[in-house]
Length: 75
Image 1 (tube, rainbow, N blue to C red):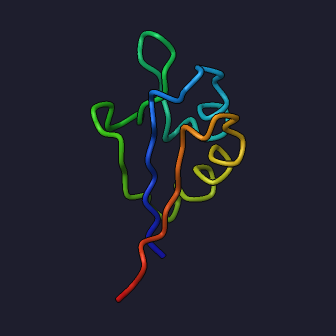
Image 2 (cartoon, rainbow, N blue to C red):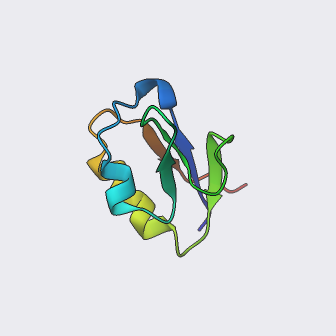
């Protein structure tokens, strides 16, 4: 099932947990604010099946909900 991951940099407190749980997916800018590792200018990414488990862990551990996961409804 397709999963969309969104990041909200304005909510990020630079705690580092997302990169701990999903280092293949998340990185930080020079101020320590979350961004996607391979797509630093994007705030939304369609996850591969391999990325979904670590993204879910990062989502669950983010204390300020700067990471959102969504599964688009099928029509």
